[in-house]
Image (cartoon, rainbow, N blue to C red; front, side, top):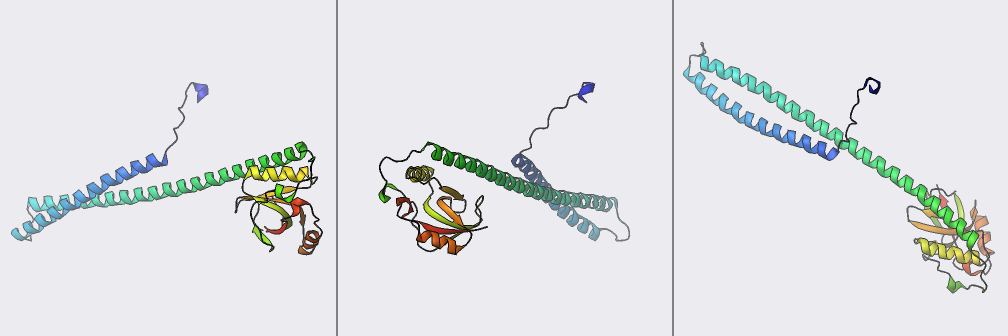
Length: 243
């Protein structure tokens, strides 16, 4: 059309709230019309019955015929109004369902994008820490490390952790704060351990810092027994991921 010199204005975005309000307003008008027409039908039916009692049943006078014709017309219009209201309610339900679906789709997409962004930032932070953290001039002690969440000696099981393989992880610390996470990582690297990593569990909103992963519990337990006396290993525990 543009080649012919004809340009169409882009359609404005339709607000579901505005559309719902418009439909509700029409429904309200229809309710008023239906109620008013019901009253009129009731009034005419009463007059029709009274007129019938006063008139020979064999012959209908012009008034009776007029009443009957008007009643037939009103009842037909009433059925049309009731159907129009039902159609509007169905349309409103369709809009609400579509709106809810779109809302959930956008939320899901936003969560997905946020997860991607967080993962990219986490990887960049870990790489930066490993590249820029120097070995400590003085040996660090256990008190220098904030191990975060208290853990028991029992194996903790996490399910459906994104971007983390199934297996048994040797966990050094658990933090829900990025600053505390990074501080712990820097001190581990400064202590000479560069083979440190972490994953984020969206279900608990916590970062799990680990030094190794195994496919079976026997290997994980063996590594626990030979973990040594490095201060960052003081609160080491095992976490199993099941995806």
